[in-house]
Length: 234
Image 1 (cartoon, rainbow, N blue to C red):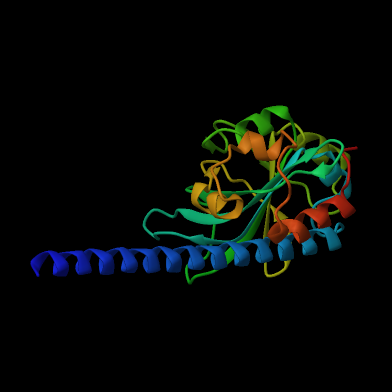
Image 2: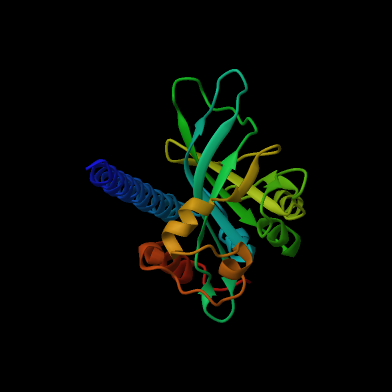
């Protein structure tokens, strides 16, 4: 009798654990889909307003792009920021790579108290910047140089100065893009989200530069947009 009750409770525990894991995965999946959708919206506006955002010639020179929608302010005492987004790199001959989820933490770049959030776009401009992106974690300004990117019809001098940086940073607040310095912020792959997207752990290098991973259906709109509007490096 006692053994039967014990077996019953073990089965109930296993069942409840399974249900809990299922619910967590479903929630994570919804969060990932929302993140992809928001990143695609930010990218669309960036590409539709080159005179008011990233200059077309700068965009066409970048090696990789990271789009982080809705970056929010963390603890007011420390002034930290956090956000999650998508990264993709150019591959040849197929265009842009399958994307990888990234998270951003730390740094302080002037978000207002009161829950305001901004969208971030980071352009990786050279091989050194790409190598930083492929690490498990890197800090902007320390492991990779970062500068506020030129906006709209920037002068040649502004553009030349910006291109010396490995990563150019842009922010969008209330629909307006501006250059932004992100020194002190750290970026790393979001392993849990990438596991949910690809069904297994895959390294950033394998996804972003090996050209061996197919673009998941969920992220097709994001990648197709880049392939159509900035198909090759100038």
